[in-house]
Length: 534
Image 1 (cartoon, rainbow, N blue to C red):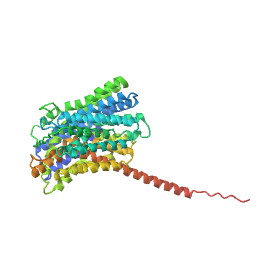
Image 2: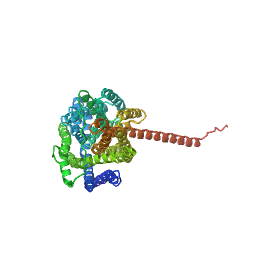
Image 3: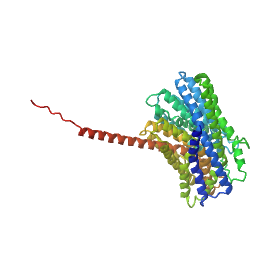
Image 4: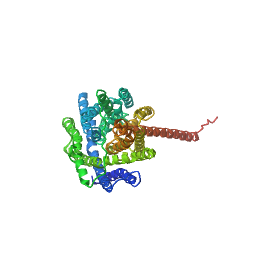
């Protein structure tokens, strides 16, 4: 356990340090001005992020992932489909109800009291129901050997048909960016390890030639449900109030208080200790109920699982406390500082946004779980480093595109429609396993760091641009500032499928070259037999 934690600590340090270092570097340029208190808070926040991510990685490997594997392998053996549907629905919905990424975004969009559309109940309830239903659909797809590509194509076509109903309404169309965002915030640090392991457990026990590719795809399937659910909920609502933007000032001297407020239930906030307990407890309750009925594990394995959940709980609590206390305010500060250059040097905003995107993906806890599973199931053929580089480029492009939209103010559909057309078209030439991993990567990339740092940064950029163009009271935050989480979920789908297509082309070239070499050797070794005439 000690060696495992030291390895996780090194991995998390290499993941978090680039983001912290980047903010420090920006502060040494005219692009960002922060106080000495901000430096101290950023350094302390970095320590909490590193410790939290390391603990979470250790705990996820021995707790969340194992629970998903046990549940998946057992559900795949169930003869009673009713049991499969009930437990898959309950797990998908309940774990989503308190997914940390959703809690972070719900705070972003429920600043207006008595909001009749985007209040927390409608937001979290709709997303949870959508995830639960599509986890059921995804599990049944694996059990009955159905094509993942066909199901993706069908449900995304259905989703965009519903989106069209929103797009033709001038008032409700302002919420399109947030509708797309809802699919990205669904699959975060609590849900991804479990859903990944659930899909892998079902696929491995079911077996067959497609078992490896079927091990992935469930996270991508779960991301569709919230988009459809939020679209339907908004279609029946009206009277959308304006978004209330509250700028963040520099940090004060009371450093410890920021983390205490973020950790403990104070000032109307639950605190990360309560939020994470709400996120993890449904998994434990449902698993142990199912385990007592069907699995019946020995006590030593139960004890190991509880230790893993304990590490996950402490690690995720520390990580989310740091994002809430430090990264969200810092994201807004960085965004407003960059936004001040929009008239004279907008290219600076776009360039910095791209660089921030390159390092953001490294800070997402669930990404490390996904890439480790990719390398494990592919028996090392798909390297974790290769996937991380590909995801990094994809997320860099995503945040760059979001910054462009925040500066120039145009519809999110100009990105999402061609983006999904490209991603769905790439499925034709991309190997099945890369398509499945690509859609999982899209859901995984948009985690707590994206929602707590990147989203406030884009909102901060738009607050300056919107105030200069329209006045702060008339700026359309829903329409022009949101959508970055959706783009972070979209671009990895395209990037990983391109990687898969290139891999397939390279393998085809090697096979052709090998055949030619074998043919050439055979030609040289041809033996001519001549019958001697007596």
